[in-house]
Length: 554
Image (cartoon, rainbow, N blue to C red; front, side, top):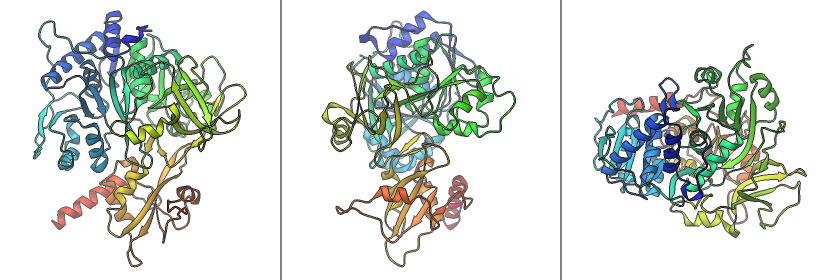
């Protein structure tokens, strides 16, 4: 386990020290590829950093990265941090307004992008005026296709990394410098860019390695997209600090999960509640327990399957509570028995926690439910705000505490239990969703006067499906759910596209004219609610058919 002094809590320092201590040890490989050693990874990331410096990237610059799980996407993150630049790795499902908002908010002039995503960028070119350069790559490392034409943005392949001049070293960073901006749900507004300094990401990675008891003998299976906090810091960075190996998968498949665990010899991993439920729902096999996996971190660990899941797969699940802004201050322990529904106790050395009345910010009694507040004991180890959104930062940090928006309670033993979300946040299959983005896209559809997006319970515990409640703009306006769905599918990431659509005469409102979203959520799915799953609608097929119709009419 690396033990760097506090003033060296940076990714460049951690990679250099690990490459010195374990130069030939395997660091990372794609699930179907060959391993790359720590020394080789450092050399490749340094060469890429030099290529990016030749592109004009300087310390403090924000560079957007948009690509699938692959070595190029991973090395882009590392290389930018080695230069002292800020990596802004964004969701590959972003398109239209969500993509434009992320690029414009980051105020980025350069994007590193997988070539298959270039058409999405081209569609938004005129709406991202600050972006002037795009460097593209293929996930498999082959020469990228650059046959698209942009009107304003300069497009070129990401240059093959070459060593810099003798003695050249990237600028590096200080522990207080920004390492990354990660976009997370804006709840009732646009997505917010969480500013993570180097010290925060290092601490999160070190704590994860310690709590999961990761050593150089472990293999970490990582399948979450690299634009999320967990695979980056709880998985890959934690493995680096511990000297473990990483097996990086391109995506999650419940049906193939166990086979992939075996294929890469994984001993440790991470997951989220709905994913575990999907795995648990697969037909049981007599050899399910015959696998190398020994432990995984999860949030949550669905209580109705937790004990059975551990027994079936001969594995230990550690439930935690965390979020991008506040790290993972609450962990279950490998040294204690499973407590279904409990996310553990705080790491008291590094965090202070309070549970308060959301209306007063005053503490509630033991056992009472309230909003969880967090702050750190070390400087630069919690998020530094939302980039370009001072109002949102002030609201979240009021009274000198970070307000998580999650409702929890603490029992007599000091264990914390997650209860529910506070406010309008929608969480679907581990993605936090902004209702604002859905509503913004829906109001551009002809015939819609107003609308509201809410989360309703899905078939998975602590998980939502999206319901869009629509009011026509006149008594004669006819809203076609299939047409509306196709409209949204072309403008939103796939995980934001509603499953349910309900057409009503009016939205319920408070005396101050705010929409009563709590009432819409409580109404759930009724006889008048249209369900795209029940209608047999496949989003990809719907979008393709709409495009074909447009081509014919043109």
